Length: 80
Image 1 (cartoon, rainbow, N blue to C red):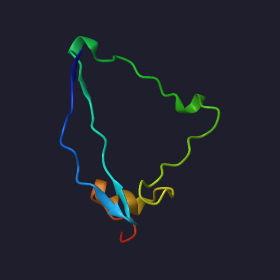
Image 2 (image 1 turned 180 degrees about the horizontal axis):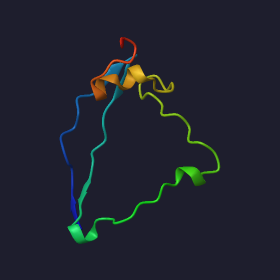
Image 3 (image 1 turned 90 degrees about the vertical axis):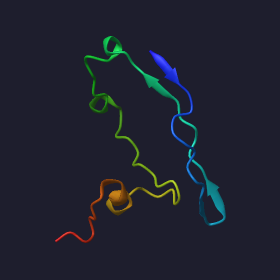
Image 4 (image 1 turned 60 degrees about the vertical axis):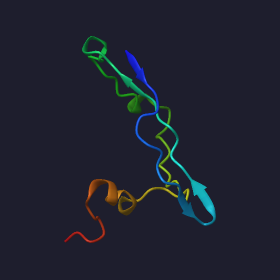
């Protein structure tokens, strides 16, 4: 396994309601093919309770499909 520091560039700070939000630096791990997992385990059914909903980083409210639309290039509210 090889560790690569500071992957990508630091995003422009987001400014809203007088607060500045920045993306943290990231670290990338590059695995050799022999180190890649060959099996996965779905832990969700064994959790004692469902996970809390994802929160929007700017509003701290649960994320809606419209919040995710820019990421997936679809618009849920204007579908016909």
